Length: 222
Image: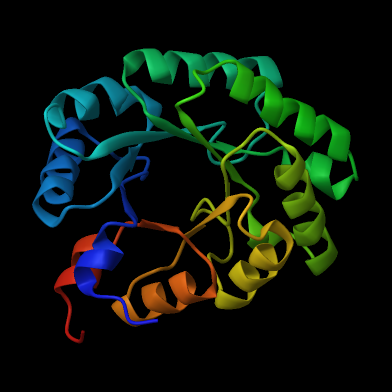
């Protein structure tokens, strides 16, 4: 698989989720996303309206995060947060599962919560489910993939970027082996080079969450 920088750019959710985010950061993020033809910007819920306004009349989509970064919000709060984000202009939402529930084996709870969030937003809004692979064993990663496979979500997403690790080629391959072409995979966390981005796509990722997006597409190499 040979991927150009432009093809990689079209898969990137250009991300700024730092706790010190300001309107200036978000405006710059949106400008960069338009300039480089990134797929979307991924920003905190408080800035969805601003991003949506900045991206008006451009093909770049507005994505936000739900229950971020720990996933411990109640299901009702996650649903409200997702619904409000869509009202503010979000076209995609990335929700964090209750990771503790997964560790306890409460798979039905997690699937129910995912489906509750999916039901709270329009069908054309893309729902991605963050499972935080760095905090899971191999068996837990498989269980999470099975849950997402059976759910109403569109994507599984590897990481928040706040845990001890991010996306790996091995994890993407594992998720792909379970999900096949039924669900999409977003690799995120620690993607800083064009080569690594290409490896993740080759392994099965169809979207990339990156805060180093500009460096990736403007950096040296093909």
